[in-house]
Length: 418
Image (cartoon, rainbow, N blue to C red):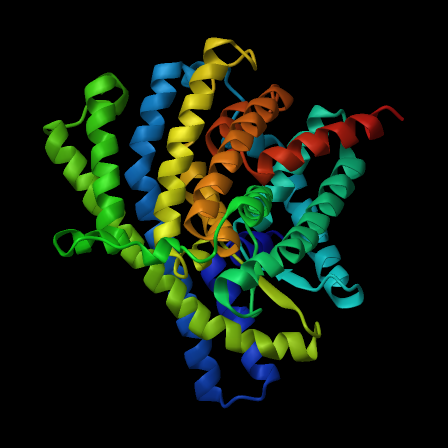
């Protein structure tokens, strides 16, 4: 079981390569086609992962600067993923394995037919539910069962709720979204459907001929990150640490990394979609009829790249203003740091869903509301996880990991009372 969890389920390229191979075998494809399709799917996932890592490495110094400024790094030892995993890693692994079995049974025998394929999130959801259970006083097999059932329900239900919104973005129903941006995307999509205008799309933005290069998301994204580093470097230079070069040159390098990361990530997305979606038909036809694969949020970015960037900028501005207000009035009795990573990935996905429901205006307004909810969620969940993973949730929360962690704590506290 440890081998399966650590080397297959937590290894997205291998997992998706095996799934592609299974789908092609079930379709009785030739041996050469099975090898080609499975390897290209795995390669696509590796490329996507590398692009995502480049994006994270480009924006992490800004995140670290805000942490240093707020003193978040001084939160007590033990409140992070590494130390919590050292104590509860086995529990998380068991919950993950049992939860995945339950998830597949739900897809096979109920009308909710999604298969969650975002490999690393197969680990992080049991992780946050185990932490919520610990906070609620659960232990032993009750803790494992609670985290497994909660994870299976999330993996099944949230992608199913999102499928219609994803269809409005992609134009077909070949896959859905399997990512903790789920609730923010639903909020953005709902708001956008009420106040937006589908006639004016983010992708139809008209630019003067001399500024046409802004239509390339990698160039625009790199410029945005460059400006952010200049602002942070001038405002809180100590937060960026001991950089070995002029801040201007450093900002250029980070902008280059971010822009290149977008290009790499989107290429991986295209490869993965081209291989895994046709291969998955074999599984949906033979094993789980009519099942939809649920993928990581970068899968959506290829469809509305302008919306992603607009969502990132909108979320950063909106959430930072709300965070400053919350910190000034000590709303959560803990300092919240700007959520750079969540603003890009989760709010980027929320903006894409908002664009699908209400065009440019829907993407902007929907993302603004989602960004406010993001701050509220991270603040409450930081309090909820005060004895386990507070540091971790302050950096990676503000999304479904926060929302369902809060709900998980309430339920586990009720169960722990018996």
